[in-house]
Image (cartoon, rainbow, N blue to C red):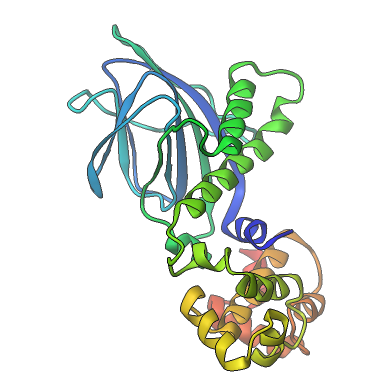
Amino acid sequence: MDVLSDVLVAMRTGRPSAARTTSHSPWGVRFDRGTAAGCHVVLSGSCWLLSPQREPLTLGVGDVLFTPHGDGYALVDQPGSPIVDFKPETHDTAPLDEMHISGTGPATELLCAYYTFDPTRPHPLLADLPMIIHLPNRVGQHPSLRSAVELLGNELSDPRAGTEAALPPLVDMLLLYVLRAWLDEQPRDTIGWASALRDPAITTALHQIHRHPDKPWTVTDLAAQAGLSRAAFAKRFTTIVGQTPLAYLTWWRMTTAARMLRESTAPLRTIATRCGYSSEYAFAKAFKRAYDVAPGQYRSL
């Protein structure tokens, strides 16, 4: 896996969900503030985004809207229409039940996906994302994103044998292509993860950290991997990523440990070794400093 793939695994928890909605005007749906990130694609018709963070925004066919931080917002056929709260009845399997709003006017079809990100240790990439990402539909732009939308839309509109298995990876693919599209649109001189993932030296160092958190990395070691002097690498990494190399190494080790505690039954000594700690005691001390609970307690939460 590459660095961005690792980041997505670290960010997301649970199983993503998707739905295809049809709403006849007048209509409006309010999405309250919460832990879920939302992605909406206009398949037909049009609608407006109403958000406290910005002026009303009109969305047309093919437009993609992504709200990564779970901020509250509403989608309406036009400002002033009645608004109802979105309260899905979630199940153990995707997709969510389709939503229909009856009315007398034209219909708008939306493809909607929902992701839950880990609120306890959000990846720094998530902090770089704006409250609202709007990717307008432009001819020839982001073809991979358009293909993902088409595949997911087809599965939701015409469920067949295997749809339940196909939906989660397709919803994950949609998130990946949305993030890629946003990263590609950032100016070349941007500071942050958009720049880090384009910088060969920084990406090489991040790849080494992600692939081998068990190694006793020093700044000198990582600088050598990146092909830079120690001083030049440390300054460049800290400026672009927003953390020192060793601070990010510790963050990634703790994130990896938390995921192993949640998803495996590996003994603590094994997790400690894989995360670069020579003893369970040193690992437990570092983990408690990061999460405020001991590893064993975290696993039982």
